[in-house]
Length: 391
Length: 158
Image (tube, rainbow over all chains, first blue to last red; front, side, top):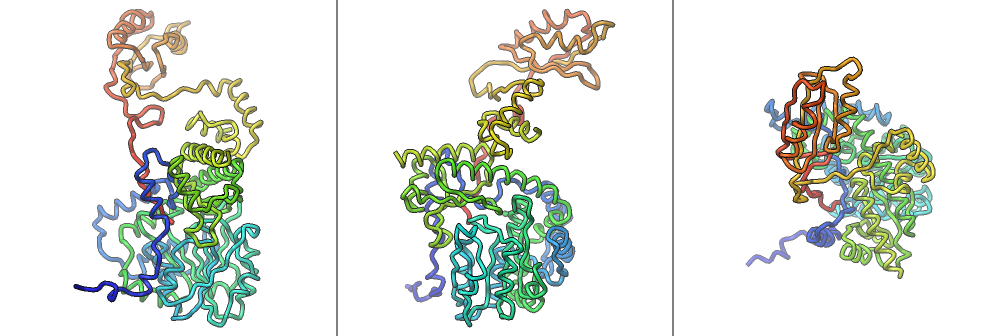
């Protein structure tokens, strides 16, 4: 008989599966459970986008596209980045990928050699570290602090840099903390990075979802030096409610993107054609739809922040994405215990902060990609749960 | 004000505190705005949306098209105001097209609808003709889809 343990790749075997699987399995068996564990919009993709996808199928556009993606889409992406974030990219510097996730994978794989270090602010989205490890790289976590608004500071970055540092991941607006980096914070990092050979992977998937009037600022737009050392990763999932279409993109310096394209070419061939046609509509005619969704998220965000603070779970005002990250330390429970007990007692599913790195202990992530009615009911249930814990 | 009305239209059971947070106002301001909207007769009431079929009720909904001949002192508005006073009449609209007034009736039985038309509506002076349509099934009412059992298909994701 074959001995699978001798077949498998050691690094892959060493990677822990996502810790929230168990909650998802429990939640599915409970009737009337409200899930705040989702990481995707509750909105359906705007009709104009869906229609463009349907039309492309009706016209029989069912072939592969060029490896880097449809030229009209890459042009629209450049137009969109200029219009929305004042960034200058040429269609040739853009690769259309299978979600932002693939773009992250491409960037890390294109630059990391065995032993190279990657600085990652934590808590953060769960995919960066496993990808770094698959490439033989080493993750250097920088734990961001609530008192700094969960931002990485210049001093923290400087302290983390070594001779082996190759890449800095900037996952802002941040999942799960909702933190954003303003221009002045980015300038501080730019100062530290100047005269180094460190590349920046800026994951801007939540760029459209910022609140309080200030738009997202990309590190690539800070200075010529930062532009030259930044690969931006973005996608259609969060801003255009297109998670199931699996479409994202990256853009950056030609020297890097050209290498990323090679991996994409051999691993994927091209992103889904129907999704690419649909995405042109997203880039060209959906600013209004996005603004409506953002307005709705902003309203829900206030409800969540207020609700958690009211019940004694300190919750900072997140400035981006669609999550709140309240502290549950006052309950005396670990994040894992809190989530499991809450799920059984009140049928509300939230994600323990530890799913986003050990430093997430003491916090939970609750998504507000749910209707106001559901959020308001979920908050009532959580409040009841917290009250019963304290009595 | 528009935001508040939109919230109330979607869910009138939110507390003043919740509406205040959602609209980024103080609860006092929201209470004041609701009072003002009520006083101005912009906010006219809060009603539940009921799936009568599921509730086991035999209630009958019907739509009645009415053609009328407006009189000098009894025009469309006067006619509409008069029929609106019948308790079984739920909605009254002045219409463009082939008839003038549309009524929605909620009655306990088909017979009650028939009696309403025969005894109350048809004898009115201005009425030229009526056409009664019975609702066989309600699929959506007041923006709410009846028996909508779609569940949240989204899984956990990070």
